[in-house]
Amino acid sequence: MVTCKDFLRELGEYLDESTDPALRAELDRHINECPNCWVVLDTTKRTIDVYKGMEAQPLPERLKARLMEAVARRCAHTAADGAECAAEHAPAE
Image (cartoon, rainbow, N blue to C red; front, side, top):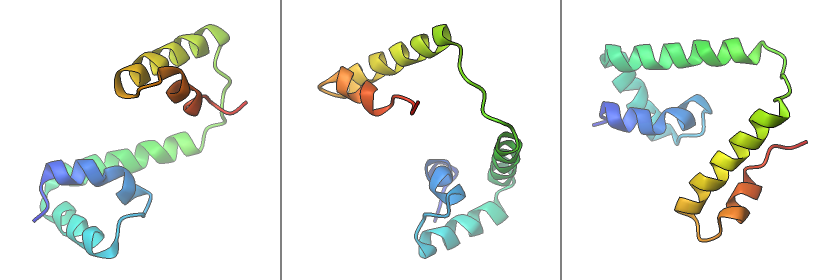
């Protein structure tokens, strides 16, 4: 039985349609029975649709630098080599 916590953990893969069919069927069943998770899914889908319709905007350099610093700090806590992790998350230019 899928819980709300399970649904939230799988939400990204569910939206990407990359969950295996058996799990997707369980998630679908949960969504149909749980009004809270249905709202989360519906709202997330609508938000994605809004952003898909927008043109990409370049980040100001100062904001980009602050963002990359935050990513590097986060990676330093979770990886042995924080600089390598930050490079993996660097935006394509």
